[in-house]
Image (cartoon, rainbow, N blue to C red; front, side, top):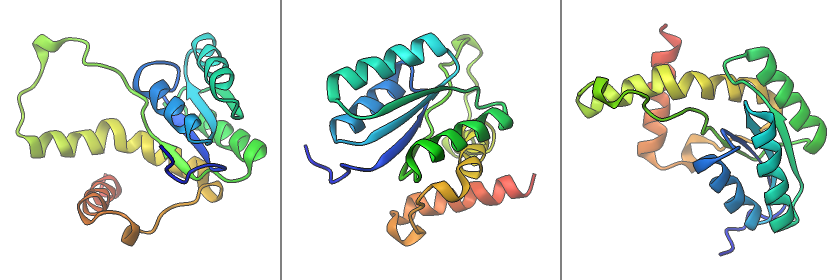
Amino acid sequence: MNLGLKGRVALVTGASKGIGKAIARGLADEGVSLVLLARTADALEAAAAEIRAATGVRVIAVPTDLRDATATKAAAARAATEFGTVHILVNNAGGPIKRPERQITWPDADWLEATFRIANFEGAVVDVLSLGPHIHVLEPAELRDEVADRIRRAARLYSER
């Protein structure tokens, strides 16, 4: 498949395994250079080496705990030093539900709000703020209306905290 991404740069969080690693590999298959972030240095470097060997693209591994704003800013600075601009940001850090028996049965709207506000959106804000001028951000008009509306709602919720 050719998505027209060759020559772009992507920063992928949670990239040492699972979905994050698979997304990174898919982007590399398209010719996208990668900045991989995850907490576990050994697993992250192994993922980077595997993707590098399989695709030939430039891949750097930057062990980073996204809960630490200073570490996230340092990772963004490293991405900027290595590549200049980041075109794609994949916010994938997180983990599975650890205790399914304690799963809360909320309506979908409540889950959406909690997910954006607490789990994903705060990490995404730290990532985006850290990347600052080093990321090329799509204008809302370039996004599907539904996605743009959700992002605006989440941003409003975040700013009201």
